[in-house]
Every structure is written in C-alpha cells, then in structure tokens.
Image (tube, rainbow, N blue to C red; front, top):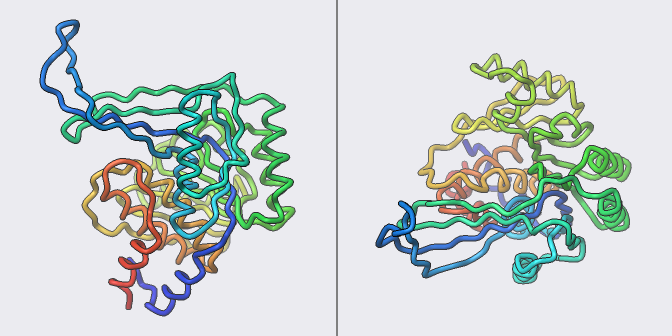
Length: 331
C-alpha cells in the first residue's frame, strides 16, 4: 500500500508542523467507566458493575482536533459546550492537550454532548448518551461564524465535522465554505446524512459508503456502482476531490477528468474502529497542507486510520508512530 520512497516520506514528515487548522462541528466528550461484574442485581436482571476506573477522552469533532495536534498541527476547535460539569471536564482536556479553547461557546440551553461507556472484561455493557440535536440559534451561529471570520488570516485549513447534533446548519455551512474559498483555504468535510448535499465547492468531501447509500437512496454493490456514484457525487457537489471510504476495501478517490483510484486497506488486526474516520480526515488535511498529492494524502490517511483501529477506544494517531510504520515499509 505504501509506495512512497523513504526520501518522500521524510519530506512530508518534516512539513507536518505549525499548520493552523480550524475544526468546526459537534464537540463531544467520551466517558469510560471500567469495572468488574461479580453479581446480578436483585432489583432487575441486569449486571452490577463495580467501577474501579473512570476517565474521559475527546470524541466527535474534538477528537479530530486532538488528532491534528498529535500530527504536529495547531488545532482550533469551534463549537458548543453546555454550562455543566462535563463542559469543565472538556475544557480541562483542551488545556492538557495544549489546544485553544477561545472558540468554544457555552450554551446553557443544551448539555455538553457526552457518550459514557460502561465496560467490564473489555466488553461494553451499555452506552449512555447525553445530548441535544436541536439546531443552534441564529445568534450562536453568527457568533461562531464571526469568530472564524475574525481569525481567517491565521488559519491554513478548515475541517467541517458534522455529526448532526445541530451545530452545522445549512446556512452556516454555506457561509463557512464561501469564506474559505474567498480566502483560498483548504476545506475538508466529514459529512453525515442530514446535510450531505449542502457541502458544495470544498477541497475534499469524505463520506463513507453507508452515508452515500443513504443519501442517494440506493445500494452500492460493486466496483462499477462505486465508480458511478462517486463521479455522480463529484458533479453534484462540485468538490475538487471526493474521497469515498469503503471500510475493509479501502478508499476511492474521484477527481474531475481522471479515473477512479482505489487505495486498498493494509491488512491489520482490527480491535476497534471507533474514531478511525476522525484520524483519516485529520491526516488527510495535514498531508495536503504539507504538499502531498491527493493520492499521497489518501495513502497516509488510510494507513493512519488502520493504525488507530489496533487500539481499544477512541485514540488519536501519533505523528512519530505513523511515520515509523511508513518508513519500515518504504522503498
């Protein structure tokens, strides 16, 4: 899969630094409660988990921001938190990760989006979600956009990370993309179903197979199906590139006037796919800023996504780990 030379990888690695990347979207907190199950509750036929470890990690758009930081970039997360204890935990994680919290807005009308997993013997027993999917107010939307606009000169790229939790409205998406194109900024998108066709005129649009099937209302069953829908999507949203992630089958790149290119997945021990998409969009964006071609950037992103699948839970890719693995296979 990695057909880049050692020299080329060294060039790219040396350029993975000091880029300012704005991540705009649904900020989340992932909570983990680890413990042992030794008995069943007398109140109901459910296990009693005796918790002995509790910790929090970034999720959603916040995990994308963390990936950017771990790859050597400067992450600038834009989004909403509640006015609750989990917001304080989130901001503490922001400080520890050396990220800026200046563009995070506290909104008392909604909770901090939090997904708490209860785990015993390496198995998830239950997940508890605390969130609001209501669209943000026009006032908050304008505040987010003004913050972005006021800092656009110091931003190298924008990642739109949509989990359909209400932050990225159709209007905000349009205004951000218009601003980014006016200022000649790289803009990459990780979409979800609700706003799927609203992300027009971006640098890279990165849906997965299921999101694409759901949005077009038809199944993708073969390589010709992939090719047809990829170019149809490219034309419909007018992005520079489409990067369609295919799960175990790798990734397909679409560019106007060129043939579809498929980047196969390298066989790995897959322990947990959580957060792999966040790693892919982060690595792709930094790679493009570092001067990689779309094919090179996709190869790096594909490899990085595979590496994080070897770890349990949502974890970011580390720059050194990524390139050390790539160097070991370089020509």
